[in-house]
Amino acid sequence: MTAFEFLIINETIAHEVFKRDINKQLVTPNTNNEIMELDSKSSSTLQERIVDAMTNDNHCLEMDVVDKSNGGTPSIIQQMFSGTKTTFTKNSKTLTENLAKAQQTRKIPGGALLILRGFTGSNRDEFVAIIKAEMQEGFKKENINGSISIEHLSDLFLTPQQKLYKIGLFIKNSDKLKAFVYDQNMTANETRSAAAYFYNDFLGCTFSPTDKKLTCDFYNHTTTFIEKLDVGEEVKLDLKGSLYSYLKVSKSATIKVADFSNQYFEKIHKDLYSEYMKENGMPIYSINKDLTYLKNKLRRRKVKFNSDVKIDAPGDTFDELVKIQGSKAGYTSLIIKGVIC
Image 1 (tube, rainbow, N blue to C red):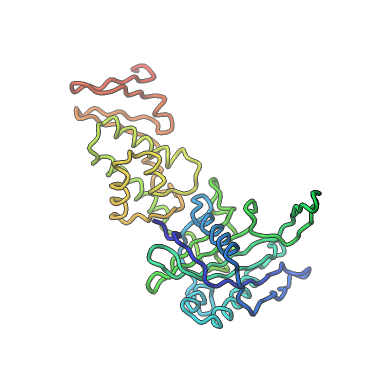
Image 2 (spheres, rainbow, N blue to C red; image 1 turned 45 degrees about the vertical axis):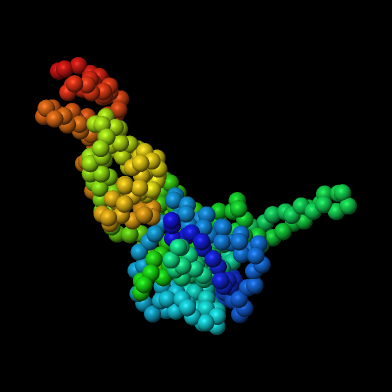
């Protein structure tokens, strides 16, 4: 179960922001006074787009809310929860003005701004989402009297193939906010290339300062869990090798408990692992991978035997240098690349 299961939109309002003018001056946004009436198909499609984006592990991260100021986006979001439709509309205009101010350069394009609120998750938590979508062009195919014609369409946005949109989604969690940001520029190779004007200047969020600690905790807790498993030593060694690859070799910029579990654990161990990690304070959402605290641990891989014999080899070539063939009657067969020197 995720925070985005059963997401339902109750209200949607649309505004428009523009890029700065030739003199780099702010262009007044085009704001709307009316909440949109979406038909069932439109509402369903929009909900699907949001869920697909917010559950994309490579491009969506939970972030820390750091802007505590009155008039900042987080404080306005708090006012929008459970507020009247009039309050929702008024505050949505203020958010639009905040975004226009945050877009400081002419390099930042304008676009449609959708602001929505509703409920999400099994606990039916309130959420407010802000979508900035750039416009694009396309064609619509029509079949008239057996003949096919096309019609040019401008100002399209949020099409399935379009990647030019960003989402900030805030969930009410008691008196606190949980914030999630989707940005296509948060790729598997470079998370921090996400547009700072959007997640920081506008949304008032930042990447968690504890990423390096969470990554280290992920490694330590997973290692401890593997060591406690009631499986053979060869299986444990394979799992530790998988953990090394997941953290060190993988190009993904994020790590996630469920992701590692699904890739490497047997079915009977998946739930045990998830519960163990939860009990030890690990988030269930994707976190930004930061190996700062693990550089020394991951530089070399070590295998220790109960006879006090140890094997120590470079981490990135361990599997090429050491082949463990199995154990029998208290002995382990190894093939090691190299000769005694």
